[in-house]
Image 1: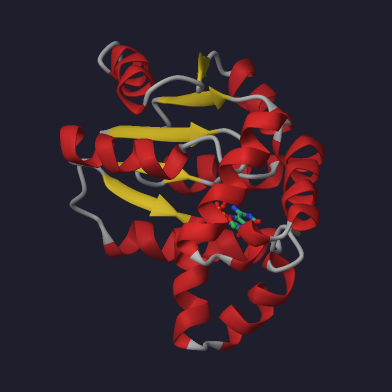
Image 2: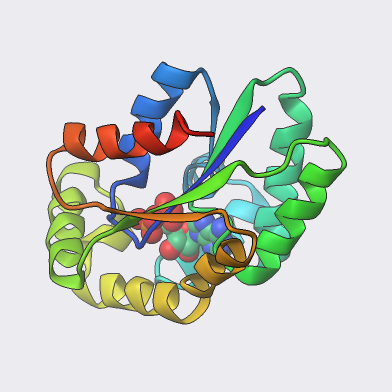
Length: 190
Ligand code: ADP
């Protein structure tokens, strides 16, 4: 089984690269951001609670996203592997994911981090906000809050995988194809 964690700040290109990876390697894409937005559009209680936080650029509680991922893993028992996109976003989530995968005997193969500077990130997110209509992309203050949440709570997750010798960083600035090639070179080495 191939289990990839695609890592990087908001706007680093995780969603775009995930789509290309799914096609090439036949993996299931698990994006907690997409799962949460789907809860919001269905108007569930979970979605309503999550929306309040997401609109401010704040992370939703660990137990909420861990529960969602756990269900999705159960729903896809026959999968060849998964791409985790936007998860784990805290060290507690990373620990929970290791435990969930332990019961399946299918550990994380590796974490690939897309490295992009703050100026480029803000520029990309504001542009995406115009096209996607995502409320959290339209407001510069919310974007800065998300980048701050990333630095405070999410960046330490890299160290968690580094300790397991599973961390690989790549340059996330360049053409989509160049970034994809760099990712595939790592994936093919697993
Ligand atoms: P981006 O990577 O552009 O920030 P996402 O779609 O991954 O976009 O996430 C959007 C928002 O959803 C986040 O700002 C956060 O509020 C919430 N969210 C997504 N994934 C998680 C997670 N694993 N833990 C906590 N909150 C999350």
